Length: 128
Picture (cartoon, rainbow, N blue to C red):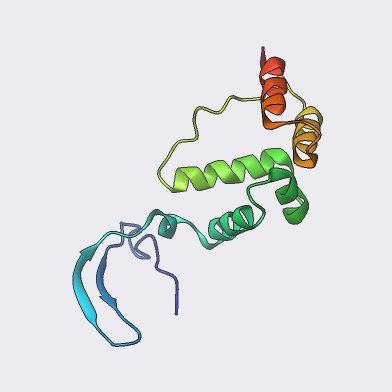
């Protein structure tokens, strides 16, 4: 069985589902059904999401598992968010922190040596 394509392979238009069928009893329902948002993801994005969920959203573990940097993981996450039809927003950019400083805060949070509140405060204090 193949995954549902998110776009028409000919013109790139939106795909709609017009028939669903039960494998067990062969019941068929026809109509026009919208697909869930995750069908919009590429196979590579879906693999990223599955890894993200399996690792409980811990970016430090994602870095190790995927052998990618923190900024790359964030970029991939933002790409997934955009593919789902949302715009990443509300997050504060951490331009004043070096990747090493950000990583140390995340490592401290992951190891439990600082609380979430302490990590957020450190990140926000560095932005000012």
